[in-house]
Length: 529
Image (cartoon, rainbow, N blue to C red; front, side, top):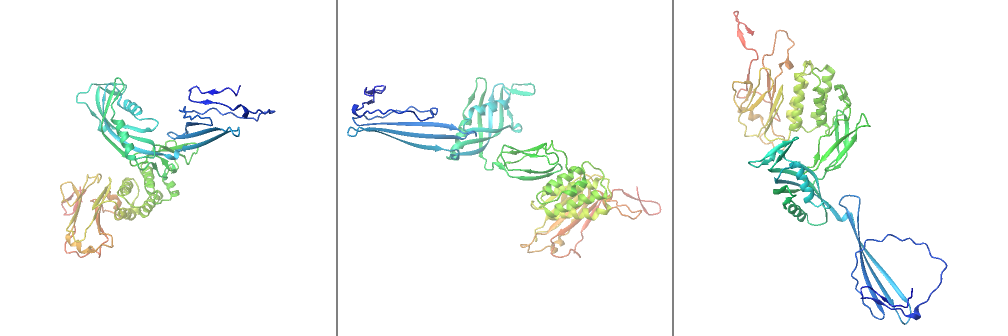
């Protein structure tokens, strides 16, 4: 290579001349080991060069883009390199200086947004609606920025063209023209920017007409809502198959937990991503039972957190038994007492407790030793129930209760009526309605009762009237021979009264329907027929 020959750049914008007297060569014995890296992807620069007898400057910009393994997490690196070469005639030296500046956009600069979208669509063409909607969304939304997490066709809201042409093939309906409604969730990866702007961009993409050659899709009534809760909190779940400690899980994902009795198997639970992200019911099919019989409940400690879970366990155990022995009744009733004492009795929990009491009453069990316990539990459910306004009624096949909160100074009278079949099952409750033909039990409380209610109850719980109905007379069976209870049982009680209720100016009226009508025989006595 002849260094004395001038260099001419192919673009004809650069020429390089070397001062001959400044060239010096020095022999060396060996070269140091050097590693050559593969060249980076370089965006070809547009060089700006100034050429004089003394100075030449070239600026090159290199752009390298890499993508991390996680979905939608790009990392961009910008490198700007400036090289200047100076030639001095006075010293004969050549000096080259290189400066590199690197700017990196890391995944922390990328944010995730989640939206729920409800939309009505008109589909023209022969297709499977669910399949074509999935294809439409995948092609309409940019997959490097938006991802559809779940798509559901809302069958109840499906509306068809007045004169659709349809047929059915292998269980799939196809329509020439149809109107469908669907709901789906979208994960959006974006640089930090305006959320409203991203929502409008999503709406714009969904409004664009879709046509693939044979199918046309048009949208209307697009509703886009931001999902703010995007994960399910950690939760303990006590079941007959053991205790499951579900970890905090992102919406749209499944959590797994080893079966307590067989760690070689596992259960799963899905965290449903939506406007109210929540746990779905767990799939415990692979797990064997831990609590197989009622005595196994003795090893389960009732807490405020697992009270409803224990109720569900008891319901499952009772569904397989028609008779409870003494010790089983003790176990079940003790658990019910713990549940009422330790938990907040909501209407849902109260209904579940009443269902269990009804199952016990309908079983072929000796309940006489437990009559008072069952009555006390039932009354405690009504006294402690919260989460309703004014009044609430809980009804099961063999028992029913109604609670009415009284506003002091506004009480006039109150009636409680029950209609039922002759077996006492399927009771219906009526508040402030007078008896009619199918009424089997009725109580009327007089207006004089208001004097027993506190008049200034700002600092105390308001008075509450509770009515109870029992459709199983055997619970009150008398030990004396020759005596039989010939009616259903009804009661009324007042909680938070200001004074004992007695010596009222007006009577409390109770009407009961005889299960077996009475007739008079020749000797003047009554006989059941």
